[in-house]
Structures are given as structure tokens and as C-alpha cells.
Length: 308
Length: 322
Image (cartoon, rainbow over all chains, first blue to last red; front, side, top):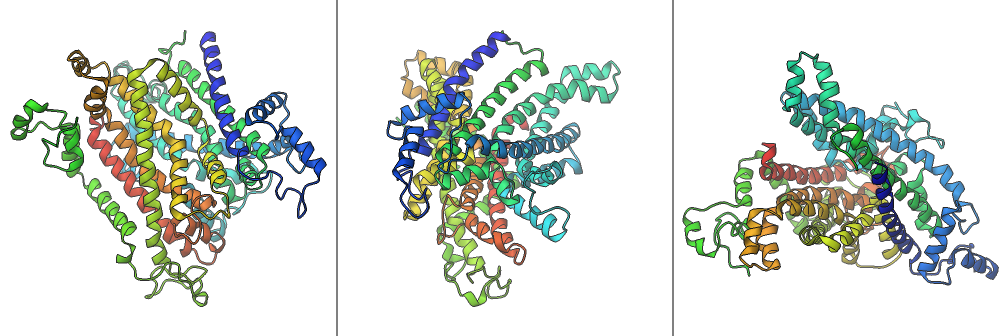
């Protein structure tokens, strides 16, 4: 197990470097003067240009820039924006909100998706099954921004059940609807994944044995069936957390949540390369580590899988 | 290499593939007692599926809409008269007018084109690039596999929406005056670059599963070249999962294009697109929700038809689900 984890961690390194370098090049290689419009209506003073050029090694090749940036990053220094704001502060302000939103989305999609999937997987006919099939199809077809706008309009401005926008510190109860919007697509996936998986395992020998032993149905489903059917769902949930954080930008925009999505967007528009790269580097790291965690969880869920 | 279609009276597309079933010598016999390939079988199943016909009808409708919008409306979608700004639906304009007094119905019709072009081209690109690399890595293995798989991991690690925003912003900054087609191609490029690893993995795993099958070994024993094995034996037999993925992908690309236009990094006004219309409705949603609902409705129906088609194709191609 230990060796497996070590090998996986070593494999992460080239992927991490490749992905972050790609982002770095895309963000910093934007044609045009990086100082254009950074100092209001006038040209930037030479001292400022010199200082920033030195800070980001702008006069050297992109490889040297990336190298120095990464070295500083691993010492915990995310650098400053052109306006002199510490990027670490920006990240500390915005990341918790996005993490909260993504967690809320994952919880909602797991609870609703799994319930729907398990119920329909156990009984593959009837009204409920058809209802879930049709509604998941609709969820799959609805882009996030449509769901977001419609729910905001109906629940927020028509029925006035929720605040149409979320307060700056994003309390959990206000994130329920945005979380639902963000997770709606994945919820449909999970419901279908769980349904197929349960239906497949329902015919398994071990389920028949468990029933024949006279175990109560609750135990057969809850312990035997669920644990065996959960593997694809857990895989999906794990990789989805990272994907949701990266995809939260639309939801954040609609509900006015101060998260990383909006910060990245603003960073790109105002050419604050360091902000964009800093935020995405953490995102990539979370994504890769979640993938690793999911692989390790396999062994917990399914003892037949062993990592030597 | 590829002789004209021998079997299959069905359509042109499955014809190429079903030829694999019979070799050239058997061609005559094949014509009389036609052995159907995987796709021939799937097509027979598809024809019986009402879902397929419903989604195919809608898709045809959207394709005609994209190709000849003039058939559905004679109104200029960019012609605005401010005095009729945000007028509700009426006999003149079924869906009402938007803020600038432009006919929403005409705009929704003309908006189909951008979505269809981008999603179809991006899907073809993704399948060709991802599928091609998937076949190579799966069949060749070794260092080619290791290298290309790591490269795929790198692209797979990029968050999709943020990655697309960064790419499109770098190559298509606001204020740049690129032609509509150039921007559409950029959107296609961004989608392909960010999504190809998924189709590569699908193709790679099905090639890995098929590569040691007896018919491949037989072909190799008979001295077939690598190229011939890949194109005549491997690809036709491993294409099914990728095809299913492709039909669903078109639907999600329609949604993705709209999302990028909505975020202001894809197509921009005065080009007509569903995403742009939904973005423009943003500020008036309280007073004129119809500005949101009509383009959103079209968008959802378009995505839904492709998702349904994907479902039908999957059911036809995947015998396990029956």
C-alpha cells in the first residue's frame, strides 16, 4: 500500500508540472504589454515596471519565469498583483466560499442522486423509475446557467423563498439552491450510475446468498448490495469535487458568490496573470489529490482490490 | 485499401464498416445472405425505437434551421426598433421582442446555426484526435502509450470552464475583430483541446480489450500490415463506445458553446446565438422572463434531442443493457 501511494505520488509530479506550465504559458504568453492600463491613464513609472519585471522575471524566457514562480510558490509565496495586493490574501478570501459551494453540491448530488438511483435500481419498473429516468434526462440537457437563472427567478424573485443573491461570507443555508444548481448535472449522472450498478449487482450470487440466509432486506441492501455498488459512484464523486470547483464560475456569477471562479475571470480580464495561475495551481492540485484518494478508497470499499 | 461498399442496403455510414464482416472473396455470398456487422445490427434496433425517431426528427429540424433559417422566418434577426423594446408575444412576433426591439423568434431560429456548427465540428475534432491517439496508444503500447497517456493526463487535469476561458481570452481578447468563423473555430479548438483525453481513454480501453482477440492474431499471422489491422479490423470493432460518447458529446457541446457565449468569451453580439441571448436577458429577467425562456427552451430541446439520440444509440450498440 505504502509503495503504491509513493508511486502514484511520483507519477503526479510530471502531470502537475505539465498542467501548471500549460496554464502559465496560456496566461502569461498573452500578446501585448503586460503593463498596459495597469497604472490608470498614464504610463507606468519606470520604477514600477522595473520592480514587477524583476518580481516575475518578465525579461527572461517563459521557462525561467515558470521556474522562479514555482520555486516561490512552494515557499508559500503566491506573489502580488500589479496593484500590490498579496495574492495569498485573495486566495484565502475566495477559496473557502468555492469549497463550501462545491461541498454543498457534492452532498446534495450524493444524497438525492443515490436515493433516486438505489430506489429505481431495486425496482426497475413503475412510475418512480420512469419519473427518475425522465427527470435525469432533463437535468442532463439543462445547462447550469439555465437552471441557475430559472431557479433564481422562480424561487428568488417570484416566490421569494430564497435570497436571489448570496451574502459575501456565504452562509451554508444560502448555498443550498446554488449547490443544487451546480450539482444538478452530476446528480443525474449519479442517479443513473447507481441505478445501473445496483440493478447489475442485484442479480449477484452474494445477494441471493444473503437473502437465503434470512438476513433482513435492509441489511442485504444496506451492507451487501450498496457497498458493492458504490464503487463507480465514489469514483465519480471524488473526481467531481475538483471539476465542480473549476466549473463553479457560472453558478458563482449568477448568485453573486465571491468565489475563485469570479476571481479567475476578473484576473483574466484585467491580465492579472499571477492571480489566475495561483488559483488554478491549487485547483489542479486538489483535483489530482482527489483522484489519488479515490483510487485508495477502492481498497477500503472493495477488499478484493489490493495494492501491492 | 477500401473497396466500395459491398453489403448493407441501409445507409452509407454503416456500409463501410459492415464490409469487414465478409472479406472480398465472400462478397458475392454476403450480398445474398447478408451477415450484418455491429452497426447493421444496431441500425435494425434503432429503427424500432420510438425515442430514436423523436430525437432524429428534432435533430433534423435543428439542422434545417441551421442551414436555411430563411425557411422559418423572413424577419431580419438583427433589425431592431427601440419603440417595440420588450413587447410581449403577439401575432406579429410569436416570442415578443428583446430590449433592442429585435424579433426574438427570428433570433432564436438564427441562433441555431452557431450552436450546430460549433458542436458538430468540435465533436468530429474530438473523436478524430482523441480516438486516433487512443487507437495508437492502445495498440502500440510501450513508450508511446506511456508518453501520450501522460500528455492526456496533463490536459485532463485542466478545469474545463476555466481552461476554455483562459484559452479563448488569450487568443480572442475582447475588442479583437476576428470574423465569426474564426471565433467559431477558436471555440471548437478550445473544446477539442480540453476534452480529447476522455475520448482517448474510451478508445484506448476498448482497443486494449480487443487487441489480443483471435481475429487480430489471425490477421497478424496472415501477414497483414499494422495499418491494415488498425483500419480494417481494430477500428470497426472498437468504435461502438466512442460513437455512443460522440452523440452525447454533441449535446454537451451545444450547452458548452452557449455557456462560453454566455460568459462573453465565445461568440459575441451582433452574432446571434442562444448563449448570447440568454446572457442579454440577464438584466431583464424580472420584467420580461420570456427573453430567457424562449432561447433557453430551444437550447434545452436541442441538447435533449442529442442526449436522447445518444441513449437510443447506446441501447442499440450495447447488448448488456437489453
